[in-house]
Length: 213
Image 1 (cartoon, one colour):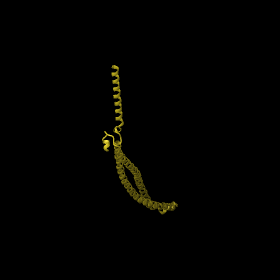
Image 2 (tube, rainbow, N blue to C red):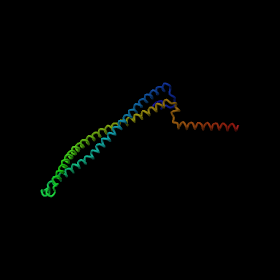
Image 3 (spheres, one colour):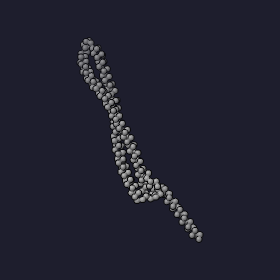
Image 4 (cartoon, rainbow, N blue to C red):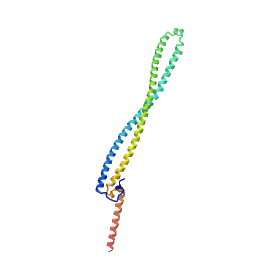
């Protein structure tokens, strides 16, 4: 706190005012720089916070897709097994003789099964890719979360510095004021009202004395 602000019973000399004003000007420049840094850090924080959310969403969406692919692969395995153990194993010559379309029916199913095998293999590859993507997304999420935590601490420190410097500037500015002007407006208002009342009652008393005389 400024010694001039503490010692509010005197008016600062001109050289003291110049010195204080120079300090205030320097502090105001520093405060403006701190606020610019604060704004930049806040922008960086917002961007990194967004990337945390994006990474989290990517991991979550991929994680929910993985069991779907696994379910399809399991169903494909059941279909292949049923085809091999059920349909093919139970097609005897008699069935072919009474249903001439049996060979074509089996051929069509064989084509479908082969296509299903290809699709199943693709899903298997995608499932492996999904596992890698989940790991990668979680890694990005952790990295961006660490950055946002650091930025949050930096923003908090800058906010505290801005508040401290603003308070310091306010105290220095008090040292530039006449002692009366350093008082809050509410206090000055009370002083003014009291002075008016004192003057009123004094004049009223004098008027009464003149009348009596």
